[in-house]
Length: 424
Image (cartoon, rainbow, N blue to C red; front, side, top):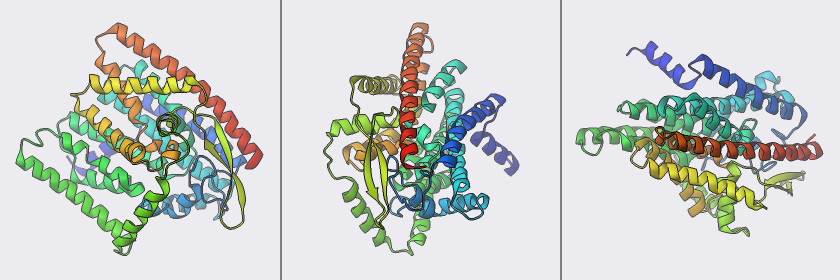
C-alpha cells in the first residue's frame, strides 16, 4: 500500500467518511458550538488569567492552557497546548479576551464532536448495529456530563477523550481483520495519549495482548514486545528531554501528587464512587459553591459537584452499570469487549481502589466514560437474534436517555445561574 493510500485511509478513519457521518458531525458541532460560543462571549469562566484552577468542577483551564499542567501527570501536554494557545492568540491579536476564549472553546468542541463520530463509527463498523440503535446510543452518550462540559473546556481530558476513542476504534479495526497494530501507530498513540496523561499510556498496549496467536507464536510475541518497547523508549526519551533527564524530579513529584490527591475525604467511599466516579461523568448531581483564591490576593467562587440527594440518580447509575456488566459477561469471549473492560479497570483501580483524585473523579470521564456506550452497543449485538430483548433494551436505554437529558439540561440552567452571578 502506497503512502497516498495510507494517508487517505487515515483521513477516513479520523474524520467523517460518509455524508451521514458528516451530517452528524455538523449537528454536534452546531449544538456544542452554540453552547461554547455563548459561554465564551458572555462569561470569563473558560479562561481568566487570574484563576489558575478550580473555577468549575476542579478543571485547571488556565494552568493547562498556559503550561500544559504538571509534568508528573501530563508529560508532553505543554507542547500540545503551546500549539493550541498560539492558535487561539492568532485570532485574538495576542490578547486573552473573549475571542481567545472562543477559539479555545471551539477547539474543544471540535475534539468532542469528532469523538462522538468515532463512537458512531465503532457502533456501525465494528459492532455493526442498525442505524436506529446506533443513533439512540450515540444520543444517550452525547448528553453525558463529560461531553457537555468538555465541549467548551480547554483541558487535557478533552483531547484525551478524542485520542482514546480514536485509538480504540483504530485498534478494533486491526483486531477485527486479525492484523497487528503497527509500531508507528503504537508510538504515536503512546505519545499523544500518554503525553497528555501518563497513566493512560498503558491503555495503548492492551489491544496488543489480543492480537491473533500472540502467545502461541514466539515470533509474533517477540515482534509485539519490540513494538511495545520501541513505543515506550521513544516516549520516555521525549519525557526525559523535557526534564533535562532529571528523572528524580518525576519520582519525587509523583509521590507528592499521590499524597495530595489520595487523602480520605468526609464523603463515604461508596458515595464518592457512585456519585462522582460513575455517576458524575454521566448524570449531573446538585452543585455546591466554595470560596477560593489564587494565592495572590484574588478571591473567586468555585463550583463543585455534590453527591446525589435522592434515590432516582442512584437507580440511574445502577441501571447503566447493570447494562455495562451484563454486556461484559454476555460477551466475555469477545476480545474487543475485553479490551474495553480492561481499559475501564485501569481507571477503576487508579481512582476507586488507590483513591487518586476520587473526590473530584467527575472530571476524569474523558479517560474512560466512552466505554459505557460501546459496551451497551455490544449488549445490543449479543441479542441481535432476539427481537423481544432488543425491544426491551431499546426501551430501557430510551428511558434512561430521557431522564439523563432532562436532568442535565436542568442542571445546566443552574450552571448558567452561577455564571451570571459570578463570571460576567
